[in-house]
Length: 127
Image 1 (cartoon, rainbow, N blue to C red):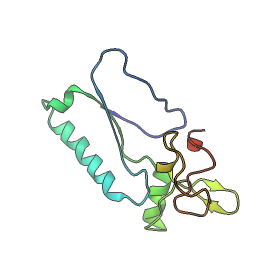
Image 2 (tube, rainbow, N blue to C red):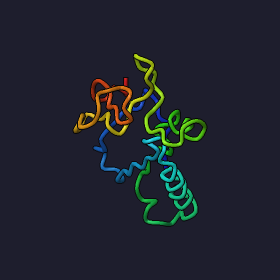
Image 3 (spheres, helix red, strand yellow):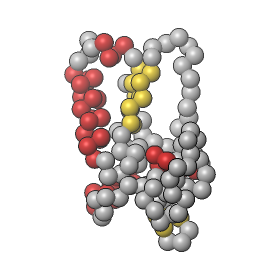
Image 4 (cartoon, rainbow, N blue to C red):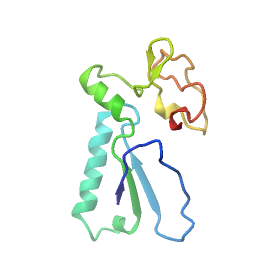
């Protein structure tokens, strides 16, 4: 099991070695979705407590909190905060990470002040 802390150096790879299947589990992409973190921590606990489980035959890559800065902000300042905390031009804050993927980019707001701001281009948050 690999527990991943999000970073700018993270890379995506394919499993071409014929090794075990890979399951990626992430939570708190939207800062205000607190329950997803509890669920992910529960899955981690179950994996650790049941070493003979069939689930141990796969490689787990777990990111308990994809959006740590937004997550903390939603606990300390604004319970309904959704985006990350990137500083943007015009005194706006944050990008909706769930809408910032290359696949199906768009379909949300391109206005930085909006809670569903997708950024100016896909994968903006990977830079």
